[in-house]
Image (cartoon, rainbow over all chains, first blue to last red; front, side, top):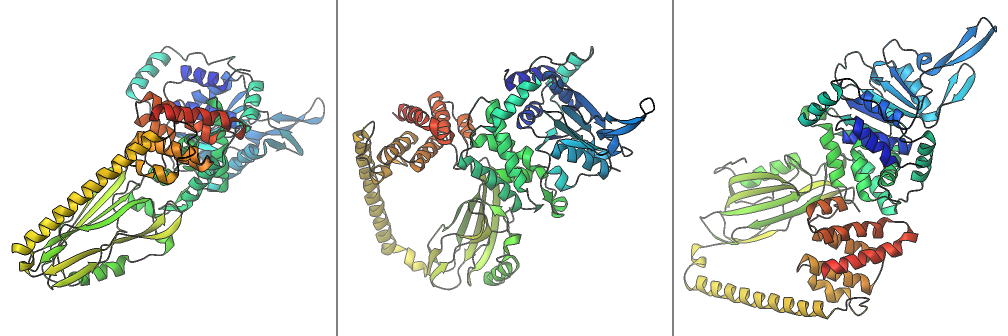
Amino acid sequence: MSAPRAVLDALRLTIVGQDEVVESLVLSLIAGGHLLLEGAPGVAKTLACRALAAAVGGIFHRIQFTPDLLPSDIIGTRVFDQKTAAFSTVFGPLFANVVLADEINRAPAKVQSALLEGMQERRATIGLETHPLPAPFLVLATMNPYDAEGTYPLPLAQLDRFLAKVVVAYPSRDEERTIVDRFGAGEPPLPSDVATLGDVAGWQHEARAVFVDPKVRDYAVDLVRASRAAELVAHGASPRAALALVTLARARAYLDGRAFTVPDDVRDIAPAVLRHRLAYDDRIAVAGTDPEDIVRRIIAVVPAP
Amino acid sequence: MRPRAFRTGCAAASAAVFAMLCGPAGAQDLRMLHVVALTMSADRTEVPLGSDFHLSVHARVREHVTALDELIVPEVGTMHLLGDERRVHRGPAGTDIDETLTLEPVDAGSFTIPGAFLDAIDARTDKPTRFTANAVHVRIGAQAANTGPERVRRAALALLGILVAAAGVALIVRLASRRGRAAPPAGGASVSPAAVAPLVAASPRQAVRAALGTYAAAPSSDTLAALRRAVLAAAGTAPGGTTRDAVSATSDEALRATLRAAEAALFARDDQHSTAKERFIEAARGWAG
């Protein structure tokens, strides 16, 4: 069985910079959770997802969410076959190992909830039949923070189902030069044969066995509880956030080759786990406070064990 | 900075109005703060009538804040408030807020100025808490009190006091050094926490040695955690920091190795604890000397 570190290294050969994004993709894969990516167009969100699927030999599907999308467009439908005079099932793009839900906030609520149901239940119902989704199953949803006119923002309850949210920043000047050099003559080949889907299942199983000391667990719980008492926060993170913190801390320890988690594991992934789970009150606009600052403050006030 | 001078009007009235406006708020309105320090001091404790003195309030919070409106300065009785200046300095360890009031007494006598306070949700306990600074005592007297033979006598007494205090500190440090050298290198069951306590503030290495002695005298997860805290502090990390903070704060490779060993000793599964603890203790001893 190859190590998840090999996937990380392979992704870094394809993606220029974006260390946090690349690591978060691998952590989500190990943790078996879904990831929300927010960033401007053209910052390699799609490429990173395709590279991840290729690295583990998984099936990759991309769904471009638009306002006229229907649930059956992503789940699949029953079609009548005139030759056999019977209905047959055509599976939608949700049936893949890595699904990129591009601009998830552009589809209406009905389509969003169909996707989110699949994420939660890991199965989809077409007609009267329920079909399990392939394993591993990872949804990577992107949101473009610009052009928000006419979009359907995801409610907090649905955002909560994403294990983490990563902000994809613009690359640095040096990284941008490397991008031009590397991609100017065409797209480089995606990584392949780095690991198998069986390896991923093994990693997920082993990561669940990583030890979490009660002090580290309490630290995760304290961070989530501090988010509820933070200034300018109307609704803090749910208990699911504490679960996400511990799950991702396990994955991070496993990626580092440790059999136990440490406070740094929790603190490092806390911004990604908390940022999409907080609802801010109206004063945040008046105060001109960056929500990221609030997340940083929450993490700063909780002492690590 | 907001310099103001109120030659007219009574400071007590303004303080009372301020307290009414900003007084203890409901818990839901409070900000979560990690208050590290809140102290108050006067530049002079004996002030002749007709001259002024400065009352300083210092607060430090671990958060980076742009203002600390929760900080309520004390009521200053009938003294005239000549100026009020507040400075906010944001640094890596948090935010320092220094407020200086310039006061002019109008009545003679002894006064106790109550401590400044601030209401916040204590980040340590998650509970609404009132943090209060120490009170300050000032004696307002006639100008003659600070002049002539009386002043000379007081200066001589103060000098004598300083000399006695310095001799006492030197004696304690000497005794503490002897105890540190006499401590057994391993399994020092005779070393009690009380015996090593004076070493704690002397130097980082001595603090780690003291924590090692405490752990040897009473091995437990608490004393092991205290030892790790001493190692983190030795690297220059504030309480509540992590191993990464400490590792990035020091270039001492032996200390870095000790910090990494501490993680396994504190957070690994029970069946891996004993080996990890031994490595940590060995590394800590090696570093502390």
